[in-house]
Length: 187
Image (cartoon, rainbow, N blue to C red; front, side, top):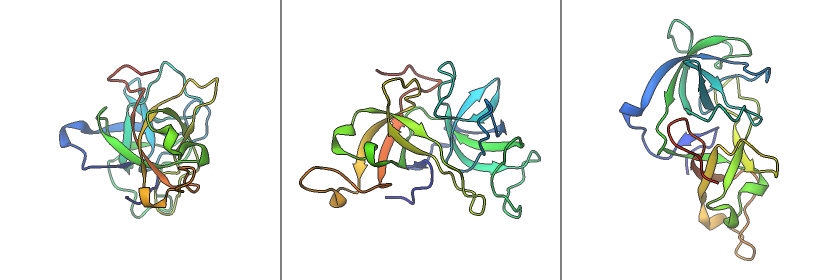
């Protein structure tokens, strides 16, 4: 399984489904950053970080593959390799609604019985030194409106507990979009 730092594409994204967009960190007062591997939404033509409490009228749109300055330059030599709160920039985004991703999960989302279940986005701080996302997934709560993803696989299977089908904290799951701007959500 790939290195799990935010959402990592499970296969090479198709070039036709990758575009560079203007982006803005810190939306909806959430004080969020924007980093490689973050799930994002498209609001008024601008990429914004997805959040656990996101407005249900803003479905997910894609996953950030790279982050740049407003001039389109990589953040390689910047102190922060992410867009910090309030900072505008540009981002390459894979917006393919059929792309699947590997992502970390909390303990409640890594069980065999979550395959086929919708899960919520869990937002954690990105690593400013490496520029990698802190996003993960968690099982939905009864009041959840932000089931952006659906679990389609867990892994690696050799690390499953054979007695109860559970996994250790922060192991990976494979997910696909559930609430995407380009297709309807499932229950």
